[in-house]
Length: 534
Image 1 (cartoon, rainbow, N blue to C red):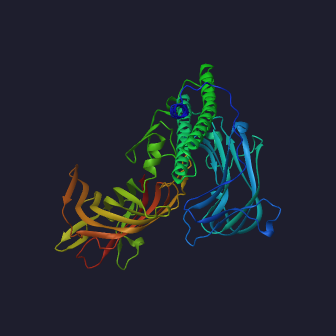
Image 2: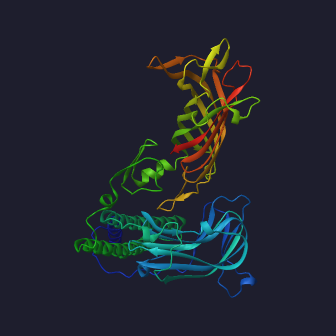
């Protein structure tokens, strides 16, 4: 009979689905702190009972490995019920010693595992080096959708910190949030997502209790195998454990069912808008130039300049934060020749009239996995370098020499255009800071701050053409003369750019002379504006 009861209870544990809804008290949160670290054995964490801190409740995190990757963390998680719709401040005193990377208080407001609603870890105002006891504060707004609040202190890298006198309290609404993810900026979570998360939570509760029961039964079976428990004693103990787990499921699920009932009632009462997130934040926009920092969760953005389409916030972050991204490049500006032994002020070419433009496609690869500063930028460009001679002159090919001659007629236009196919390569320093997504994950973006590129290019001169315009006997004549004009077949040079976001000041200089056989070397130089549409 006991076996029948036992297996019946096990079945109930596995398939709890129609538990009677009831009001259940939320269990009190443990006052004990939990300890977590990225790599096991990297830190010593817990109470500091040394004489220096006698009669004080002081916690500490100390690195114990020479090479530390990640962080150590002391934390607590509490229910948000008393804080919903309010601004809260977590404060505490921290003392540090030889912190090489950084440390800080942190607090996070979550909606189940679905979304981080508010977050701050003080990384933008971090604790570093050696400091005496200082009081620090983290302020967040707790949205009404919050399901948990976690807080604590963390140490990233090597060093030691001490932590005491922690307080979480409600403050005035006028107090500004310190978070990188601000609770007041969160959109209400749709009815469908909230209902799904409650359902997932019920399933999670059942699975956790089932797994815990399985571990307990395995231990009991081991005791039977070792002879420390009889079979009858084991069956009775298993039955007791199964009943306890079933009771846990019943009480915990009741809390979630109460939330679901309230959610449905709010929907019926019209407290939840019929417009879901997609209708609120959907639509399509067309952008030319740099994309904004973020787009709506279901919003589609078509960026004409970079020729990219982003289907919602997740797709936007995924494409923008790839280690290798692509850019459409357009540049234009002034173009001239530097003649050996002469100053550019005495140039044979019009400064304002001689210009260049460039079209290209580049790829930008972040060199370091977890740092955004260094990138290698490479690709393919087509350059158009135009030269307009002064004093009514035009280019004439004379054997293996190319020289300027004065025209017999009044030239309305005289221009030599060289078209080059080149492969640019730059080391780019990108000072864009790392970003934090709504779920608290770190990601990197490029072309969103100050940038410097150093490098060069190499390629081929694929076409030279001279265009002249003049009037003869009242007729307007336009001549186009194609040929090599003794220009160098290969082109290579140095280039650099300095700018902010997509726009940069751009300089390039051909190391090879434009005309390969002329007695005096003349090298092309360009100065202009460059746009890298990411």
